[in-house]
Each structure stands twice: as structure tokens, then as C-alpha cells.
Length: 281
Ligand SMILES: Cc1cc2nc3c(=O)[nH]c(=O)nc-3n(C[C@H](O)[C@H](O)[C@H](O)COP(=O)(O)OP(=O)(O)OC[C@H]3O[C@@H](n4cnc5c(N)ncnc54)[C@H](O)[C@@H]3O)c2cc1C
Image 1: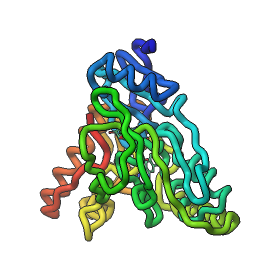
Image 2 (image 1 turned 180 degrees about the horizontal axis):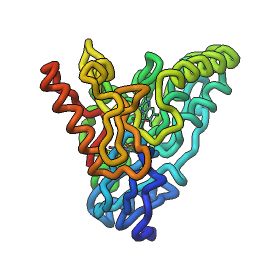
Image 3 (image 1 turned 90 degrees about the vertical axis):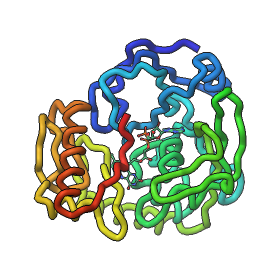
Image 4 (image 1 turned 120 degrees about the vertical axis):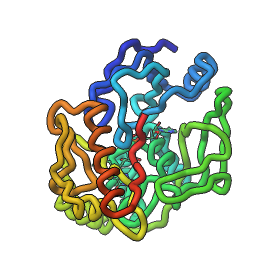
């Protein structure tokens, strides 16, 4: 399949950092994914909605965007939903809520794709992606497709240890039956609560740092007087200190500068090392 050359990825990352992919693929089916990997002899960079990644100005490795065309979600049987990697978590939540699966509503709080959520073990409102996984379909570095049960993976907070190098192409999830109206109501309440505390409507990547249990990254950053700290349009949110927002023309370098500054000040003042949740390329 043909790659798009010099493709802008600015709209493909939620920080809206200007980034250009030298070679970008928009696969429409699994066979194409397999062929892209065989042709390039590497995975390249897989991007969902770019809601948890800091992209550099230029990306030389091939970029794969499954969410443009690999975005089907369907019910396989009662309580089992299959979603392709490119399905957005919000679309997944809508489909599941329609079926009355109340325990799926956390997907409605994650602004990424199923592929990204599997990779990050994304979670919200007290639930995590892998709690619901039945099996995943993956592609290996030779372009071979495998169906793997959940027990092949070691899963922890915002992390998934894979049995071998792979990328996700889809997964089957299991939910419990509940009430559609209650699910809708609960999701609305949770989103409203979140909108009250997070800088929704700005260009950001969600929480930048993992919470260093039992502490909260945001509290540590706030205690170090870093709320509002700004460097070349990259700003520590005044609303939620674990968010860094692009207030204009922030770049890879300016966001990275703010990340490093926050880490070093928090380490100096509290002796706690903040680990990135956001993937930095
Ligand atoms: C406002 C806001 C709020 C957020 N709130 C939360 C929250 O409550 N909880 C939470 O967990 N996260 C949250 N996030 C972060 C983010 O939404 C999640 O981490 C999400 O799962 C990332 O999905 P994505 O598709 O955008 O992945 P991307 O950011 O595109 O990619 C993330 C990583 O996954 C890899 N990847 C992407 N697709 C695949 C694939 N198919 N196979 C293998 N690897 C892949 C990428 O290469 C990259 O390493 C928030 C982000 C924002 C902007």
C-alpha cells in the first residue's frame, strides 16, 4: 500500500505540536498492516489519537495510523464486544452503553483509541482497560497475526508487559449487564466532575506524570509552586498541575523543557522522582 509522504501530524496529537511524518500509512485492513511491517521490516511508530505522546518535529520512521480506517466495533455475543485498534474509546463507550454495559463507562473518559488504551492500560473513574480484556489480536515484527489470551500479558498501572514485541490490531472485551439509563447518567456525572478539575478545551496530553503512590503528582507539583510555570508557550496548567498545556505555539522542545524543569524542581524539593506517563519520542 502507498504511504503518504511529508504528512502533517499536527492534528494527530492532542498537544497539536507541529510534526511531520516522512512516510505515513493509513491501513484499511489487517492484511495491509501485515504487508507494511514486512515491507519496512519494522513496526514504525503506531499512533492512535496522539493523546499520550510528545511527537518530535520530524519523524523518520514509518508512521502507522490505524484509527482512520481500522475502526469497527461490534458485539460478538452477549457481554462480549470486539473493537479494532483504531476505534476511539468514546465510540467504544457509546456502543457498550447502548447495550447497557455499565462497567464500560470509564472508556468515555479516555480521549484515545483502543490500541493506545491497550498499550497504556489506560484507566479512568476507578477502572482500567485490561480488567475487561478477553483476548487481543496482535501483529508481530514479521507481520504475522496472533490471537493471545489476557494471561500472556503482565499488566500494571499504565503499563503492559507484552510476551514478545507486538502491536495491537484489535481486542475482545467482556462486560457485565447493567442499565443503559444509569450508565448514561453516571458517565455524565463523572465527565462533569472531571471538567470541573481539568483544563478541558485546551491542547494537552492529560496527566504528564504517573502518580508516585501514595502521593499525587499534581499535589507535589503544586506544592513546588509550579502552577502556571511557562516556557515558550508550554505551560503547567493553572487548573490541574499534572497537565502541561500548549497555549499557542509550543514545540517539542518547549514542552520537554517544562517536563524536565518540573521533574528537577520536584526532585530537589521533595526528593521524589516523577516518572513520565506521557511517551516521549
Ligand atoms: C484531556 C486528556 C485526559 C486524559 N485522561 C486520561 C485518563 O483518565 N486515563 C488514562 O489512562 N489516560 C488519560 N489520558 C491519556 C490518553 O488518552 C491515554 O493514554 C490513551 O490510552 C492514549 O491513546 P491514544 O490512542 O491517543 O494513544 P497515542 O497517544 O497515540 O499512543 C500512546 C502510545 O501507545 C502506542 N500505541 C498506539 N496505538 C497502538 C497500537 N495499536 N498497538 C501498540 N501500541 C500502540 C503509541 O505508539 C504510543 O507509544 C488523557 C489524555 C488527555 C488529552
